[in-house]
Image (cartoon, rainbow, N blue to C red):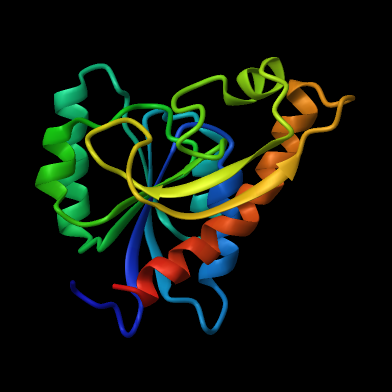
Length: 192
């Protein structure tokens, strides 16, 4: 892997407000951080997170996702041009193709709002509440061609209270996501 003076070059993919992106940017500015966020890519040109990345002097690209293969072709060029070592999916609401994953051929990490392997895909909080689970949580995992099935790097639980609804649980899990994503990246990079 190419190094950026002691740090790995990261691209963060988002679709919305970019709250995990903010957490990663904050972490990347720490002296002992192992990453430099070089670009932020979104399938939504109006994503709130792009504005935040731009203010943080990170290159931003909002590319409409009309055609998956064109989107992926353009993004692969960007990743290569910017010498990206790792892609971090942070609330990126599109599924990358197996072809993209193979062509990039470097690690892609994702943060998922459940305790994988439980509740892959969408509506994780509704499913956890409906099944009367005692715990929910977040997982950071390596992306493979199978949805939410890659090796889990780090997980953290939150207790589901009887009074919790989907909104409350989502907030509790999001807080955990912000906490564990930087730690998972550290863990992943120190074990490379």
